[in-house]
Length: 109
Image (cartoon, rainbow, N blue to C red):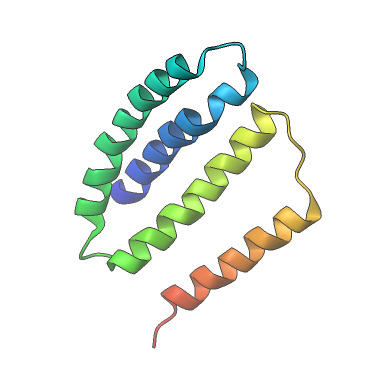
C-alpha cells in the first residue's frame, strides 16, 4: 500500500508540474520552467522510493502499469476540476481499453 500511496502523491506533483501553467499563460515561460522543475523535484522524491519499495512485490512492468493508471486518474481529476475540461465518451473508452491492458498484465499465467 505504501507503494500505491507514494505513486499517487508523486503523480499528483508531476501532473501539477506539467499542466498547472496552462491556465497562466501570462507567466513567462522561463518562470514556468523553473516552477515546474521545482515541483518535479518532489515527484522524484516520491517516485524513486515508491519504485524501490514496490519492486519485488511487483515486477518493473507491473510498477509501470500501476503508475500509468494512477497518472491517468490523477490527470483526469486535474483536467476536470482545475482545467474545467469535460470528459468525453472517447476519452472514457480509451481509459477502459487501458484498464483492459492492466487486466492482461496482472492476470496469472
